[in-house]
Image (cartoon, rainbow, N blue to C red; front, top):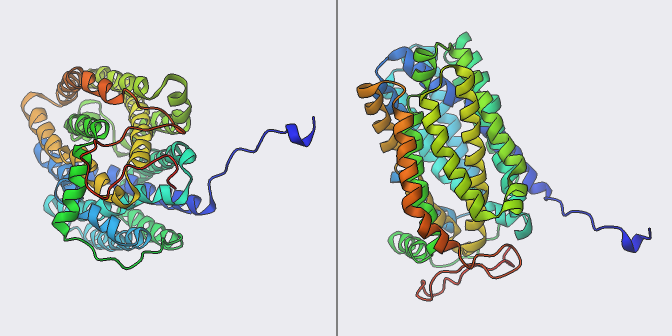
Length: 431
């Protein structure tokens, strides 16, 4: 075989992307330790599921309150600078919380405030992290890059972080919080080394006008608008079940802190598999079938979680849930990165995530109320039924929205001709 017949090497992701990847993994590991320790700590302070759900709600409340202005910041300022600076603030918050926990002065109110503060910073840094990926990799590599991001985030936040957090919590309640502090600091240091986009001085519109541009763009794009609404319902239902998972695992199924961490790690195996195989699955069966099949599986999984007879069955079902969630993320994040104009990516992404994540705090509080009224097993079947209804209601609109959508290299769906002046739809040639 001559050299002319040698297949071209597969394009590689650039070195700058891998620094972002490492920062994501390190940060996720610390977050996973905190995610395991926070509900365990709350459960040691109170056995009331309503109070436990308050901590979970506080962590996600910033996505409802702060997403829109955060999106403007991401489009207006250097995204690299935003990421590392806000993660440095998270390190400071986690350090103060570690000191409070070590001194025995950490209660439910303080834990809720900590969760809110960390979540507020995450609104900016996470939005910027998604918006910066198209700056680092070529469009044909977006699915692969997003898949790798989902995989390392899952490995850190669900596979490495939770069991480590559970083990550290068994040693000292402040230890997992200290791990979170270190992870934020190291991640911020890595992010500070990423290449910066040169921002030319421009006259920025007022904050309200900038937010309106993002709202208007998403409202006029049928596909992304439909996905955002469906995501909002599903995350509400997801947190309705997950808010009191720690009580289901420890009180109903009898797991200790170490067992709870291992349960979350086992569940993460499905998410890791989804990140590693997501692009292949999507290419094999198509974008829309992947989304619809994943949503249907999640309906069954959520009903089954509430009926789990033991921790093994619970872990398997949580793994199936993680697999389908990652497939959804790989598809929908890639769509936003391809379809949204680069200068609007932060704002449209923030509107999308406000709709998609804004109901999570309400879902957490609803889960606490359902568990208090009907038992710790009840939230998951209730959430599963609601997810099934949402899928049936939105499926026709979702199918219509996907008509005409084609993969890389051909025309992609665009907003209606009435889109904001000066905001042309992004093509596949955009970096």
